[in-house]
Image (tube, rainbow, N blue to C red; front, side, top):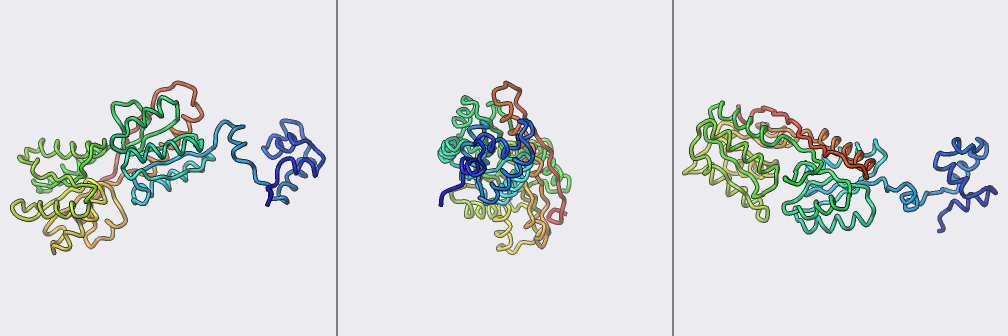
Length: 339
């Protein structure tokens, strides 16, 4: 079925194609086009179900009014909520969002960037993978607007919005130590990502500053490729002899959910047998039989700031400006799991 064109509308009304275009783009008054003919153009366009040619419109405006969000896994509840918040904020600015998952694979990230650049998205919000420096530098070199979210890539100078991973972890571990849990195990992912490095350093510094010896033996880094089994092994190593720990800190929510299942299978009670704290919060943590103490990231605020920075970059694409780098505070929510 042939789509209705501007020419079709113009021919039926006996006016020029440019007049129809001006009316449908809201420029009738400034071009002194009368109300009567404007109403006729709009009415006929509706009757004929006219749909504008988005590609032509993009060429005319110099932008597609679409942005791309690339995260590790859009099905992960943290990134899913981020996607929703990015979409809501982008809509306020008249932009649509394309969602993609890198699966923590730098090669896939590179492929996604190529495809989306070819589709002429106006800019990117990216949660970068490990070893993605080359791809981020390519965006900078080609003057393509982008903002990093959740993670940054020092020493590359970019726009980014992240949570305060270091102080959040330091203060949470400090809280555990002050509660009397002198030997708190730390389970994290085996990763060189900036957010994970900051969380690990926050743990180490808190333990060191409180005079806890041998805390290096209380750290377990789990493997992405054998995730569930690796988490369960870490939990058992820390809670069973010879370690016999009575408190654990989870560096991510996905670690926490697997670890809690393991703790339940071991017939251990929370917090009577083991106290728990997690970075990131979720509804699942809130409805556990012993709700989990957690560090809640400001996902909505992070997402909103990232969109606003990106839109500004798009509008000022050819203007050199200082990069915006935002570190946002988190909220430490104390629940029954460590009381």
